[in-house]
Length: 165
Image 1 (cartoon, rainbow, N blue to C red):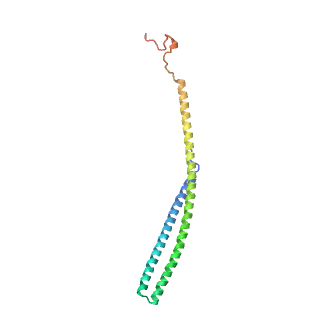
Image 2: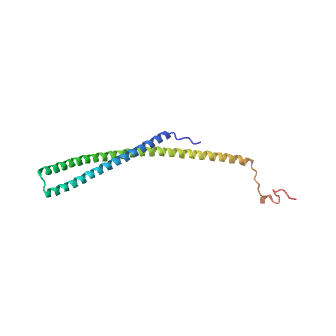
Image 3: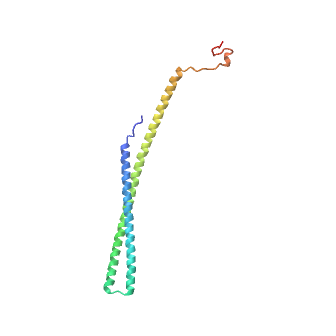
């Protein structure tokens, strides 16, 4: 009978924690990707709006329209700056999440290695017990077994076989 791994509940807990860290990391990566996508969208919109402003300026703008374009571009720049900071924060959060995920995976691997060693040791003990049982059975069987032996040249004419005459 193999003994159960005494740290099985801890191993299962480490598995749950590693899985949770994996899910958290996936959410952080998705958030970072979304933040970068939003930044790209803002930058693209600002470029398009600046192009429209230049085209309108070439066609002639009154002072009020000129001021509106400038104000809107200023607000877009502020939104871009804010989004850049958000992206930087998301990158930091993702890096932290990766570190935590690696730590959880490392702990899980350590407990998994302990579990594998335990079961390998238990398996080796089981094999030794089986071998011992087989050896004992073979030793008991040899005491009761009479083996037929053929005549030896030393016996001369005497045969070990019963005569058929």
